[in-house]
Structure formats: structure tokens, C-alpha cells
Image (cartoon, rainbow, N blue to C red; front, side, top):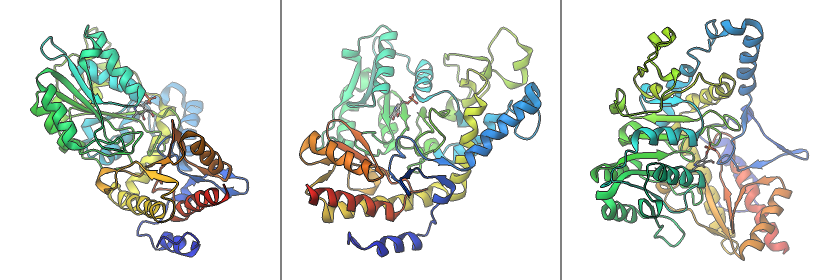
Length: 424
Ligand SMILES: Cc1ncc(COP(=O)(O)O)c(C=O)c1O
């Protein structure tokens, strides 16, 4: 199983895998004459070959039909975002009316906080993880300030309590219990970007709600990576991007979930015409009447060219299904883990939790010898067509994406690390 020299074994695992790879449906970047072993799907997923046709369809329609493209078949632009609604709801485990593709992740986080973070003098605080992705922290800190509160007091950052910088559920529970009476909101990641740790979202939502707080999730690293059950989790809102595991291109249009119990909310919101009740939107009246569901948080008419690749990507997720994809992901990441533990433990320490239910595709690997050795290994790998990504000061993140990565890719990575170690 873990023999580093046995190509045939890795190929056999690929050939016999219950979910045949969709690698042939992707553009795989080249390294010289060979394909890269690309492990950066947690940063920018590869391009599905079908994306080009979707974009060209829009360009052709624009050339041919101009303004009438809003109404003419196929795929008129006026209801274009509805084309992605159902497949997207399936990916995140939501009802179709609970999801909408719009804006970017950070913009959606602000829009959600504008509605759901309603601090009072008694309950001003937001609870988040320490070491969060900077944009999340900037957003939450600026929201606290915007409402006239002091982040030093009212942005509560839970410190990781496990030795590799991960969080036990007990630590999250303790923090919510300790700050509960002052909490207006809990905002937590589905998968932590640095460590790759996955969280029990339903349990976090339960704890947050029991404390009287609103609960929202940042699913940037979870969507398309783990099966999600957003509706059943009870979360109030969630936001995510589509350029990582969802393979919809750089800066792709993002996603947003609003639980159906808020469908007709009278909570304040930042409004725009695309969130207005559709039946009367074009009467162009002065008063905003929100359409129900997540659609009611849209501001502008959507960037159709930006949405087009998402259709190609979602088609792949619909054909494979999140459960089958996750099962394959566990096999690939489990294989990566077993090779590292058997052969490379003196070079790479796995920071990501060991239990499959506490991680997604990504393993975060701390390189022995610190930054200098870490950079040397990272550059050696890049020079051999093996692309992970680097997180200061000493971590390489490797994310086998089950739609296009193979056991052979994983073996290639492990062999290259071995060759670097033995050649030092
Ligand atoms: C966890 C997390 N939050 C927020 C962002 C920022 O996303 P955007 O630039 O799409 O707003 C990212 C981007 O990678 C991320 O990984």
C-alpha cells in the first residue's frame, strides 16, 4: 500500500477507484512535456474544459442579440442566476430558495453582517477563530467598529487549544459559554484555511443559538470539498467563494446562503434593485419590496460572464455527487497521509487532524528545519512540476482534489519529497 517505488500500485488504485476521474475534463497545466501534479485546488481550482463554451455562449449572445439577450433563449440573462440555483443548493445541502450566487465572498460577508449582526450595548460581541483568514478578520473587525464598539473588547478570538494549532470542540464550547451573554454573532469557518481542520457546523450553530447569538459560516474551504447540510445545520447565513474546489475561475462569482426562516425577514438589509420583488422590479417604484429568500439580498444585475463558468463546474458536481466525491477525497488524502507517515515523517509533520471527519482534502505539512528547509523543499517541488502552496513560516499545503487529482499524483509528490531529502 505505501511502497514508494510501486507505480503500478498507484495506477491500480486509480484504475479500480469506484469514482472514475474527471481529469480528462480539465485543463491540466504542463511542466515541460508532462502534466503538473497540481495540488492547489484549495486556492484556485483547475479550469473545466466546459467553461469556455459557457463563456462563449454569453459572448456570442451579446454579439448577436445585444440587449435582447436578457430575454432570448437559450439561457436568457434576466433569470441567468437561477440556472445555478438548484445544483448549487445540492452542493451545499440547502433548499434552492436559500442560496444565491452573487458578488464576492467578503462583500457577501458584509451584506450578511449588515442584516444579522445587530449589536446592542448588552450584546455587542462577535466570536471568531484566532488566526482566521485576514479578510474575514478585517470584515468582522470593521463591522464591530462601524457599530461604534471596540474590537479589543468585542471581537472575541478563540485560541486553538490543540498542539498543532487546531481547535477541540470543547474549546469552542467553553468560549461560547464564557462570552455567551455578550455575543451578538458567531462566525466560524467550515474548514480552517491554514490547518485544514473541518468543523461540526450543526454543533457550532446549536451552541451559538443556545447562547442567543446569530451564527454564520465562511465556507471558502468547505464548499465542493465536504458534503454540507446547511439547511439542517440551522445556520442563519453562510458565504463562500467558487474559485477553489468549485473550479469556477479567478475571482468567480461567490455564493450566499440565508436560512429559510429568514426568507421574509424584516431585518434591515442593504438593498439594491436585483433584490426587489421580481414581479414589480421593472415598475421602477421608489420603495424597496424584497423578494423572498436569499435572492432578496442581491444588489445588482449579475455579471453574466462571471457566472458562466460556474454552470460548467456545477454540471460536474451534479454528475458526480458530493457524497461520492467525498469518498474519493478520503481515499486520496488517506493515501497521501499513509505515504507521509510511512516514509517521510522525518521531513513532514502533518498539522491537519488525523480523523477523516475533522478534515477535508487538504493536508497542511510543517517542514522540519523551519522556513529555510521549507522554502527549499517547496521550490524543489515546484521545479519538478509539483504544485502545492506555501503558508508562512513553514507550512506547505497539499490538497488532492478528487475531481482531477489521482493516486499517481500523490505518489509523485511523496517520491519527490523523498528524493529531495535523500539528495540534501
Ligand atoms: C477563508 C477565506 N475567507 C475569505 C477569503 C476572501 O475571499 P474574497 O477575496 O473572494 O472575498 C478567502 C480567500 O481565499 C478565504 O480563503
